Length: 177
Image (cartoon, rainbow, N blue to C red; front, side, top):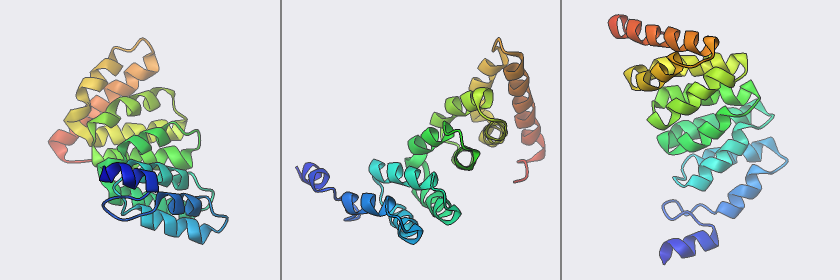
């Protein structure tokens, strides 16, 4: 009952954050208001907060995007679904940082979307997805083995390269960066 009431009022139970107010701030004309909204959203452990951070992650103003990225970092793997959506963005300013964060968190739900981006994304996004998969290490191997059997030669080659990089990292330590 309490959760229903909180949803109806647009209030986060854990934080008291008002969804409607934050939504207005996310769409404000002033970039400073949007940046502060990202900072507030970082503390809200609700799915709607990650969706609003995604809107700010796509903002035209670099400071707002940086605040949204910081917000995602604060939310951690709770924001994985929103970052998977960001991977699909055509703008590398959105998709590349999304891939980087997913690579840091190593949430297994992100392996398949990263593989798809590695195959179909823009060049910068493909490179970021490849680096992210390498950071996953052994956890990415089942998906990469499927990529090695792909009919597309480019995908097979990239899958083999990522597997080789993972195996090398196991023997020499993690890649820099």
